[in-house]
Image (cartoon, rainbow, N blue to C red):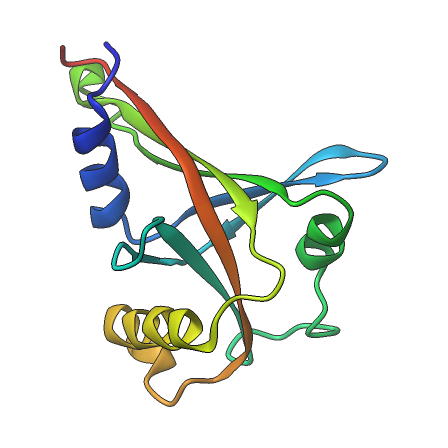
Length: 144
């Protein structure tokens, strides 16, 4: 059953992580697990994904950023799976567009939300935060 947009947004907000999908110019869909924070204070809803210094990386300019440089479209997927009760299955998809030069106030709000959600980020160990405008949020649930 299709979720109402308000329910889909609520489930997105409550999720602690998801999968960020960008478009690689050769491979197509490039999916990576990611943590995130939401901002609904402005005229548009935004989602922030950190590029942190906590987990080892070969470079702070990750493939997802390179993909976004070529195509700003992205999708963020969160879901719930229960192998014993399929009536508890659901997923939510946020259709996104990367913000090339986000306002510093927006980045600060997303940074604050990230540090509040994940104790590993208390000291703000970020190279930067990828910022996306949320174009649409849709979802599905088995329990209609």
